[in-house]
Length: 174
Image 1: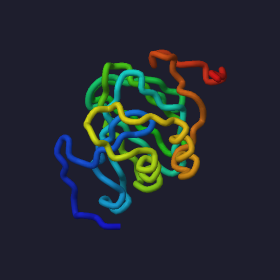
Image 2: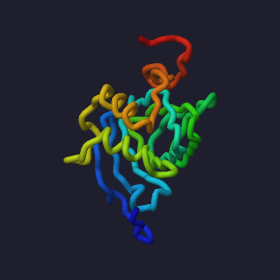
Image 3: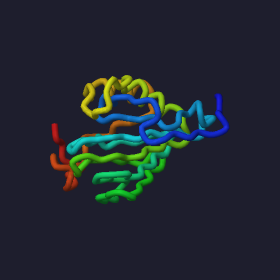
Image 4: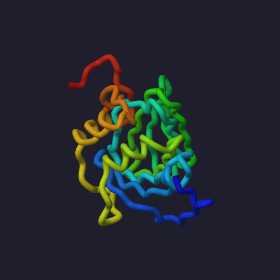
C-alpha cells in the first residue's frame, strides 16, 4: 500500500465514476492512498435514487450530507437529513438511503478501506461527463455485491416510491 503522506483534493477533483446503482461518484481518497485506513467518495444523486436494505460485513459506512435531502435507515432508526446531516452504520448493521430532494450530494466514507472499494470500483465505470445519469444495471450491482462479499443485499428498499415513508420490512414487494 502506498500512502502519500497526505491527500488534498479540491471540489470536483478526484476520479469520476458512474455507479451502476445510480449516481456519480467523485473519488476523494482510495484505500491504497490511505494505507487501507479508509476510502471516501462524494456521491451526486437525483431524486428517487434508493438503495436496497443492505449491510457491509467488514466495513463501517459514514454519510455526511453536503447538499439536498435524503432519508436514511440505520438499524431500526429512520431519519430525514439535509445539509450537515450525518449517519453512521457500523459493520453488520442493516441500512438504506433514499434521495427525497431534487438532488443530493453526500460524502461517503468506508472504514477500513478495502473490499467495499473493490465493490464500488467493479460496480461502476469511468464517467465521461459530470451528469448523474450514467448506466444503470441493478442486476450487475447485485452480482458484484455477492462476488466481492463487501455488501450483503438483505431486501428491497424500505421506503415507499417517494422515499418518504418506511415500508413494512415483513411485506414482500415482489
